Each structure stands twice: as structure tokens, then as C-alpha cells.
Image 1 (spheres, rainbow, N blue to C red):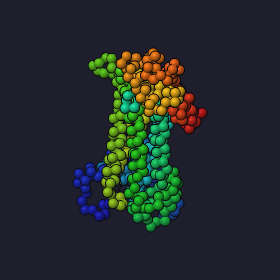
Image 2: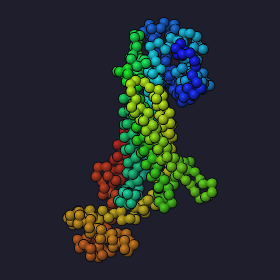
Image 3: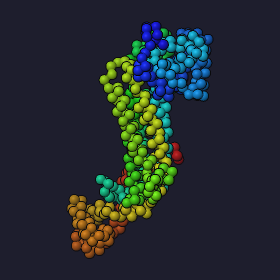
Length: 457
Ligand code: ARG
């Protein structure tokens, strides 16, 4: 493609280090679409004849059909998907193929192709997140009143409802949706027509190619257009945050599935056995989601560091932008699907969860709150009285509501028999009906709102 200026060909090592075709062949559909938009514009603007534009467009369709049928050939001499396609086009339609690259550079070409690819990746993430949200809301609805221990420091804190716990992950997913949607809006400008870095002297119509490719319009600065990879970083940031959320959800399932907890039976379809221990059912899918999140976050770091300190405009370092994005996108798709399947098909052992909520004095706060409300005791004093009651119950190895009233009254005379009604786990969760609280009534409201937002009702 540049033989005019060179006397010798590249060394083997140059060919190898230069080649991006092994990975950027994934951009072939975007490359064909962008080339077709470009040549249609060249024809419409009279920059190439309509006849040549039609020949090139038809030739691009033929190349696409070959790629579809046989895959993209990987010839390192042709470096990347752009030169691979152009060279095959020339073989198919002859010298007229050489007019395609008028008023264009591989710099704006790759920036355009990659944006189109990342835009699709945003859409795929949004679809995967939607499925996860539907699964979470469905299971939360089913378990709006199922009681489990709520934890802080992974120590029993207060009883909560399982529906409430699952809806916490719905909220994380909702923020992820907004991050991908926001990134998609920002990236949806077309760099095509920025050419190598400075724009072009040909009378191109950038608005026309932008609209043909579904962009909201052209980018505003040619230097920025060819050197900007913010769209890929925006995607990776949203993907990293999403993967981080998925890793937390995965970790919950791993803990809940362990025998001392026994809160869930994971679906067989998302578990594995052990080759030596016949009794084992391992939460491998959840563990791999937890692990993959590290690789996704690593891909963000990789691209950040590739881009850091690069002067304007295009530098070849930027060819390394694609592998981390491709890897993160395929891992994220898998992780979203795995966690959606797990949420859908896990059996929640609600009796076991409820029994665990009764351990660990989870309703101690309810005793303190009762003293505040019924006996007008200042909260700090109520906290102290309750601490003494917990200490006594612990020394006897019984639950709070198993202490005889006389013993409670010996700690504080203002306690009466009405307190026992407040100490059950049901009363505890039902009482927490503040907006966004764990009460089944509140969970049902949030579920109803979420179902509306998801278009399920
Ligand atoms: N293979 C290159 C990439 O992925 C295409 C752009 C090459 N541009 C250039 N001036 N060498 O970034």
C-alpha cells in the first residue's frame, strides 16, 4: 500500500509486530459498513463517478459474503482488516478499488469501525443487564417476605427480607444500565472524514456518512477524532463497574451455598462436581464470575495505560486498544448470562435462612427501639439496657425472646410483656417500612416500580 516510498520490504519481525489482523478481523462487518457509507457519499458528492461507486459497493458486498462464508483470511503482510478488505476488493473488481480510499485514512477508518463495534457492545451489555434485572425482580417478588439475616461485617446485624437483598443488586444493575446508556450517547458521533488527522480537501459530506452509520452526527475536531479512544474507555469503565457488581453477587452465592450457611441450592446446570469427592457440588460459575471481574477491570487498566501520555494525533500504540475491549466484552457477556441463570434457577432455602435470622440476636435493635417508643427511653440508654439483656441471654445460650419477663424487668423495670411481640423476626422486618426499608410492604412497592421501569407491567 505504501511501496512507492520503500526500497525493501519489512522484516519478519516488523510484519509480526505490526499485524493487527489476528484480532481486528473481528471488525469486518463494521469495516464493510463504513466503507459502503463512505463510497456512497463519494458518489453522491461527485468525488468518484456513480458507476465506480456502484462497482466498489457491489465489490464490498462480495467481500463480505466471502468473509461470512469462509472467515477473514489472516495474512500478516496485509496488516489489518482495512488493508485485507481493500486488497481483496482490488482482486475482485480491479483498479477501481483504489478509489475507495479517497478522502479517507485508516486512522479515521479504524476509529469509525471501532466505535461501531463498541456501540454494539454497549447494546449487548444493556440487553444482558435487562435480563439480569428481570431475573432479580422476579425472584425478589417471590421472596418479598422471606426472612434472612442481614449482615454488616458479615456478622448478623438485623433481619432483612431476601427480596430486599436481591433488589439491592437490581439497583446496582440499574446504575450500570445508566452508565452504558450514557456512554453510548457520548460515543455516537462519527469520526469518518477526519482522514489522517487534519481533515480533507475533498468536498465530503460527513453528515451523510454519519447518518448512514446511525451516528447522531459528525465529531467536531479531526485531531481528536482520530486519537480519541474515550468511547472504548467509557465502555470499559461501565463494564468494570458492572463486573465488580457481578463479582459481589457471585460472592453472595458462593457464601450462601457453603454448607455452614446452606441458604441456597445452586442449579446443577451452573455447578460442577469433584473428580475425587463424590459429595461435592462446586459453585464454579460464580467463582469464575468473581475471577473474570478481575480480568475485565484489568482490561480497563491496560487501555488507560496504553493511552496515557500519547500526544496528538494517531500513534500506533492505539492499535493495542482492541484486544482488551474484545476480551472484556466477551467476558462480560458470559458473566451477565451466568449470573442471570443463577438468579433464575437457584433454590432459596427459606426455612434455613429464617432460622439463621433468629440466631445472633438480630432483633436486639428492636428491643432498644421498643424502649424508645413505648417507655420514652433515650436511644443511647435503650442501647445499653438491650446490651445487658443480650449478655444475659448469651450467658444462658437462649434467644432474647426466650428470657423470662421477670429477668428482663430486673434489667429495666420499664419493660413489660408487650415487648415480646416486637422481638420476632417478622415484627422486626415489618417495622422497617421507611422508604427503601426491608419491610415486605416496601419491597413490594420497589418491585412494582421496577417492573414498570422494565416494561413488565
Ligand atoms: N491497524 C491500525 C490500527 O488498528 C489501523 C490504523 C493504522 N494507521 C496508521 N497510520 N498506521 O490502529
